[in-house]
Amino acid sequence: MTETTHNLGIENRVDLLGLTLEETQTFFHSMGQEKYRAAQVMRWIYQGLSVSFDPMTNLSKELREKLTATARIGRLTTLQVFKSEDGVKKFLFGLDDGSRIESVYIPTQDHDTLCISTQVGCAMGCRICRTGKMGFTRNLTAGEIVGQLLEVRRQILDSAVRNVVLMGMGEPLANLSNTVRAIKIMTNPNGPQISWRHLTVSTSGLVPQMIELGHSVRVKLAVSLNAASDEVRSLIMPINHKYPLDELIAAMTNFPLPKRDRITIEYVLIKGLNDSDSDARMLVKLLNPVRAKVNLIPFNEELSTEFKTPLPARVAAFQDILMSKSLIAIIRKSRGRDILAACGLLASENRSDC
Ligand code: SF4
Image 1: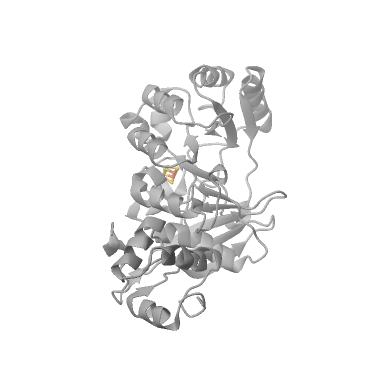
Image 2: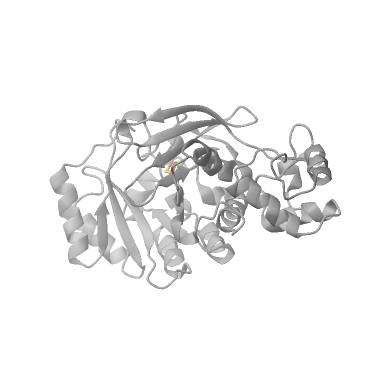
């Protein structure tokens, strides 16, 4: 079984949380069981939210006992839930090794969105993000990625949480294998049943991994762009030295997008740095070959003293230029600000936004 050691618990029992359908089938095969048992048990874990084998009454008592002896169902520990005045909730989770990560639940009228983490910390060092200042500790396993969704569903019983964004702490594409495995589990009919249309991976722009992601799974893509020139982007995001804009735009242009779908471009507007009319015109030109829509996010001054928030009139003028050239541009409201759950504010107290 691929990366089985990843899923061995402290008791040496295999952790079934975080195994894909194929990996779960391999596990049952190794126990001398039929393959279909894998789908049955996955439905109990991801849809029934079971944390033990006892309630799995469509399995024989003998099999349940055997499973209890050889396997376990991991879960995260909820350390704290912060509730914002606007309904946003930030979950602080503890992991088996004592690390801490955060997820942010954002209720809306139509659908609830959950922003989940893929790493403890982040190595990318973006200057507009708190997580970037924490440094990198380790990658999350697929079970720890999917486990955030399960814990939130356990706690918010009336929530559908149909939208998931991999945009919390960490760069998902720097943890590509576990991100892909988590996506396969989340979109599997026996899993938590998140449609790929409601699942977004947000990246700071790791070009080779973007290409590999597009070939591995069907998923929506968001790219944290933040500038229309290499000079300014390299200042904000060190990753731009490695993968400059021409390579990034080429990767976006070739990303396999379903008809009518668009890549979301995240653009944090910083006063005097990337928010002028000429920046807006450069952005239009840069994005010309890409099927894109742009989220404009006024910089949050709680993140850093080195950058400033532009005035609302400047943000509106920037948006107008994009829209006048038929580029969809939405000004994103910052939610959860009072509990440090807004874009870029996770830091465990943690986080970011890719
Ligand atoms: S914005 Fe994303 S990639 Fe950049 S440092 Fe923060 S978490 Fe990492």
